[in-house]
Length: 155
Image 1: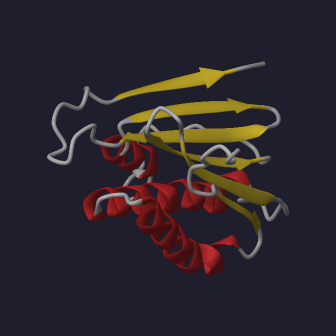
Image 2: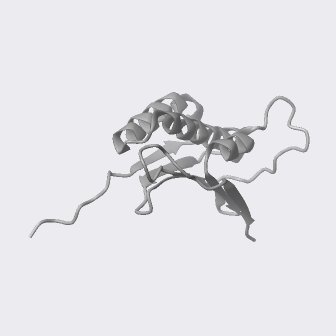
């Protein structure tokens, strides 16, 4: 009897908050290598690498901006439904986007423009950004649904 087939191994990273900015380039490389190994098309690899970078940059800029120490977790996997799911979590403090962000503050807009679906959850225990990319059902990449996103605030 043969063992059941398993998909590609998920990518799991835990990054220390204070040194997070200096780790972003390495994370981009690891994310790209992982996505290439899963067989993701190169343009989608670029999208998920940039979206993950933006989510982690938000952790560095906002969650621990007061010098608090903390960590960021990144989980990436290929779901059984054929989606790439990337989740970035922190245990820091949520800071609402500024009404006029100036030349900064576009991270969530960029993420929402790159991923097929985005869910943002924040409460007193931290923030979670879940990003999804549907992989094409056929080699030509036909028919993908319109993107959507959702934000949930608890507590």
